[in-house]
Image 1 (tube, rainbow over the protein chains, first blue to last red):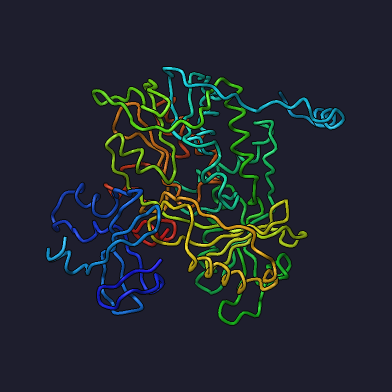
Image 2: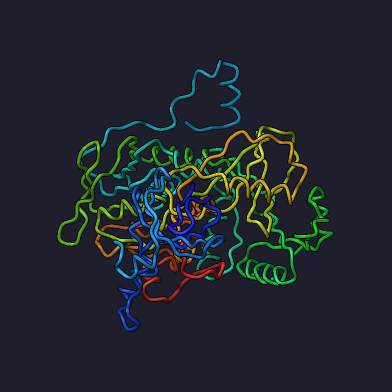
Length: 91
Length: 417
């Protein structure tokens, strides 16, 4: 599996650390309900097929990347900077 | 049909013509009392205990492929009761006791081999942790012996004790741990359930769960609608998809775990051995193949096959620990879909929908749990109360934070357990 870092280009999967589903970018407010925190920390759509998850380019530029992948074929479909997703600049 | 030495002898002398299929291949009936979605180890054992312990027989096990084709046929066959935390410890202790009587219970040779399991440690801190774990196991009523380096050498003389990066300080020896023939466990439970009237329906994929007024009413399948007022979901890595049919979102992320087997060799590894520094574990099957595995590939996956970086890592860990296996040729590698929870412990609970129950989240420790998971899930479905040995496996522990069982202390990240 190869992941295209938006800053560094296509790299071996081993350069990246997998954190989890991209829902991790949607951190609830400090005083949000138990349900909101449960949904953020624990509950997952866990799709068989297209998914979006958060990877860290640990052995490269240090960028956090939102990777759109297929969990059945391991195809990597799209990679964008997590900072762009978090700021709303990218969907 | 009962198996016995006499029967084997008779069949051997008469050309083995008297053997019959071990279970029927029934078409689904329009309604049952209980439907179990998933014909893996846990689903089949649940069906067996529902019939055996609670005298129920209007039960269907629905399997989308063939029984035993999922994780129960893909694991590294290890059986053990070396858990540390309350909640887990009593459950796995219960499971090991069921394993010890399983062949007589099922009249089926599951080839349980209590050859002993040794978890190696490689630092003072790890020794302390294992000493504490061993004490917890003894307090639970199970067996644990802390071995020093020479004690390990008596059992495992072939390890690389001179390894400078990961020196072997000792090991925690669990004599009652071992292996079992994984396929036979599925087949034995299937046969036992079938003999008690359970319909095991293969090639029958559930495509929807019917719920009316907060009560489950049945399922839609590729072989038509089937009614039942109690439905159990026990589908391991596919839990997320099946639960979504009932509108549930689970604390589960599915990951791929690879395993490997070499060509058959003469007996060389007598125990189950795990490497404390590289997440590598190995045993030798009765056919002689070295069966081994390592860690998850670490990214969410339903591919049932992994990638090369983890293959390389597992081989490196094996070579570091026991260089003697370096010339063994790997025959096959494969992957299974692991239902990883945020604390690494499983879920056996109600779902909030009346009559709908779930048994999932076994991460990559489901095989040893097959007997107790079936026993406890059957208890929950039959009585609507949790079995005492599985009372900690609550679905709401993640929301409330009460009763989390994070054996490795790695926090709420699904792939770190």
